[in-house]
Image (spheres, rainbow, N blue to C red):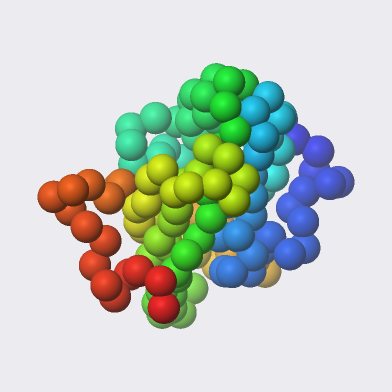
Length: 143
């Protein structure tokens, strides 16, 4: 399924590292092959995205999109809450279709992680995009 010798990258198993890796994996130029095997190392194998699709289907859908257009998603704010071996991360993002181009979408990711085997793992990931009737609250916007 993935190269266990190459992944996980040491930098991808901390809270900040795993969130950064998730944005890096999905971002790139049109037609650029994404390193989905890196994504599998961050998540519980077989877990479902909250948008009701398996992670593999999300990768396939994204591959179809990025074969035609560039896609860059970056984090603009993060709030992390830790209790023992569990973490909740609120990660506000911006999406661009041209690197350093205009923002075409913004939203918030709600990410739950747990600590096991000397590293952090993504347990679930839910997101919602900003709309005209649902603006990102100031507390989640850029700091």
